[in-house]
Length: 106
Length: 106
DNA sequence: ATACTATTTGGTAGTTTAGCCAAATACTTT
DNA sequence: AAAGTATTTGGCTAAACTACCAAATAGTAT
Image (cartoon, rainbow over all chains, first blue to last red):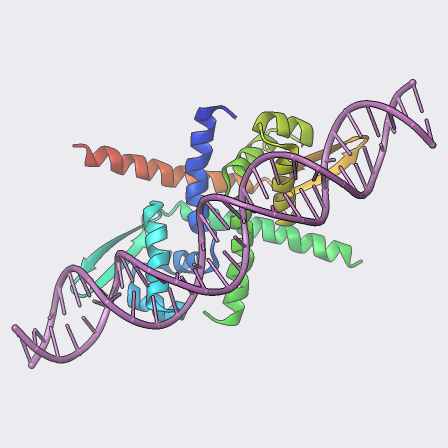
């Protein structure tokens, strides 16, 4: 792995890492339907606000989300819809896994 | 988040987690070009064999890779090509990030 | 200014992860 | 069966991550 490759794959891994948490995937899924403020997300997630806020900042730092403040609320949204192809990938693997499970049972 | 959703997003996150490491992304990228044995991967990655082996087992456990032994070597390959849409996603975000960087410089 | 609401930040304890070495396992060749 | 090669597993330490609480910050309303 050349240093150049190293850097490329590290950049990619940073984004993948940001997505690699159930709560953060849930948030991304919610935001794929439209922007939400922190309090709405907090409610849906059901964890401490500070926890949710930190998850949001992880996603933002990775460039997956963007936010803007309107009055007291901060609204978050997806920065590019390409994130949905990510879910395709995950679903694809899960489907394969399920298929294999079935096959093993016979 | 209902328990059902919880379970779904955990399953997805497990796959995402398996992909969230530069070396593992590199391996997946290599395997997208065809199967490889551990020693070839080890050579390309340039880390201890045991390290590479552990990365492979993480990917396999997540259902992303499958392997089979032929003689002394163990060959690994992608289990479904959908993983490539994952790279699309990562590239998309990286592109957006780069665009923003450019915009900020003006 | 004060009180109130929404969000972020700092600190901490517990858990998970990564990478190396050494040892075990599996297969092949002599 | 003994020696050699390929791979996996166990053990260990250092680093990274998560969730909560408490405290700080930012904006709004009285």
